[in-house]
Image (cartoon, rainbow, N blue to C red; front, side, top):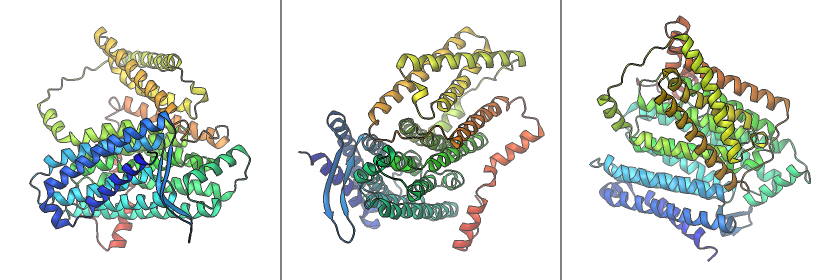
Length: 535
């Protein structure tokens, strides 16, 4: 009975891999059957994930090995299922179920629909294996298989030059991430003598508690894992591949933005006991995440394509999630992954109907308010937002002082509520004023309650040893705070300053992504011997 749930999970993953190994021609001939099977297996994986969640909550995490050997190196084929694993398995399988069901209609009549389901099943199986793996060897293998399956989906239309070009650039960046992960794997084995999670986490706890001695290698391991994670989750400066992969079918975009791209964040959360051994790795991650969030937010505002705007939104959101990890707020980061994945899957799958709705919508002209009224509304919004945030946290019982990075995260939440409240207060209409207050309060309560649930759920599965008193950590917090306040101020003043020459120049540069992708394009052209096609 103890091995029933792990056996079911592995069986479903093997089933997805089996569907992915069907030859392309046969898959295309049996496309409806393959789509139905992918949907059924994804649904079963979701149900088994929920059952595993009940087991983990009511008893304890599950470590189960199916195959073990000790030569030439110790290795086991098994699963490690704790609260973090359950959350990610349920998320991935549910999104896979929705996308598979959507794709049966979206690609109906496409002669290569079966090939799509084949590689979608393979990618889903690899992603599920990645989150339930019990050691770094299995994790690394699943990591690379996920990248391979996604590459096949990105070149689903091989006659589209830009889609092939973007897939090639993504392929090169992914190989860089693989190299970092393999280097971290080798160094971990040499430092700890094992690749099993349970043994590594126990050794990391001993170092944190002072009963064992750390070394330069343990710090370097954390840095290598962080570098591998930022390539997978499209972090600055390796983010340019994501907006370029928009010529794939919409279900691929949804799977990529709502599922696969979360692998980098999951890596940091899963291996937080090891990563937190290296304060420099966390500080580097916080800085990279903050820069990515800021750049992605600014560029997103200038995009005219809905899918490219959603892509830069994903970059910004993944940057914020990495910032949370860098600050040590791993439970908040996991909550962010879940919320963003659900939102982004819906956003991509409904992007076509959104265009039709926008075409039929009559948007009234926004009233122009005086500078005095805007300033008064801004000050009032700050006051109300701060009162709502701190009041909600106090009532629910969240002590931000004891939470890693709590002050900065509260600042960012307050800025978000200010944006929500500002326009409602500026109108001077009582009904809109009350509605804006109610919406802000609802957001604060829902977020706080969800955070509290997630924090209690994954308390034993993530690291609590985060250094928060170093000088570099304080500098990092200051840079993050100033950066987010700057972006918020720029968004608020963009309308009145729209005719300023420097704002117009900034708009053009932002629309072109600040040209950060030029080195990646040149490297791709040099390696493949081709120039970038016209987009």
